[in-house]
Image 1 (cartoon, helix red, strand yellow):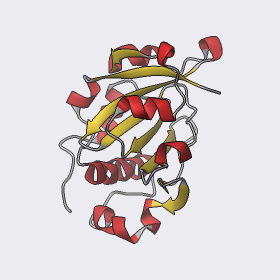
Image 2 (spheres, helix red, strand yellow):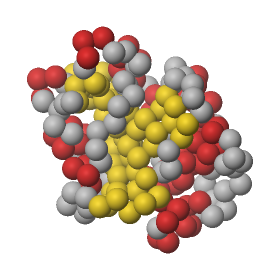
Image 3 (cartoon, one colour):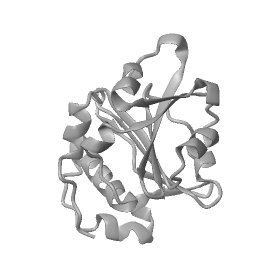
Amino acid sequence: MNALPAESQQSLLLEHGLHSFFMAQWVSIEDIGEVARRLRIEAETTVVCDFQAAMEFYGSTSEGSQRAWITRLAPGWSLVLYLNGFRSSPEALSLGGQRVFDVSCIYGIGEIDELSYIHDGVWDGTIYDAEEYRIYWEDLTYDISSLEGQLEEYLCVLGRVSGRFLDRDWFSSRGLLGITPD
């Protein structure tokens, strides 16, 4: 497994305005409506919009509402981008044999959480603890001593697992923007 993204994943995030934090979940469910239901997002709070419209809520704490933008990433996969810096618990997303990979990076304080792996409601540690995923990261040579290198490796690994790296088409795609419950 030696596929690499066409562009730096970190550079794409920064170019598209994700400067303060990046919090997202890769979910092995293709139906974004099902992902929204599992996150308990009420249908009346959702709107279909593109990334640019969703980003109007990035970092915003107005109205106290936490928002997520949910997109279809690849066959069998969705991506949940949290816009206010608070993620929903991944257990409900992973029930029924689904997989969730959880990424949390806060640029301002230089903090990145380990790449968590949740399967069927159970936290299985990091993706690096799961032997079945070794093929996705063992040949990578990113400098993981830096936040930037670590995030780039995480995004590369998840692109390999899901079959799609973040790319310009993803940033111009449409998805569901909804209010996540507290």
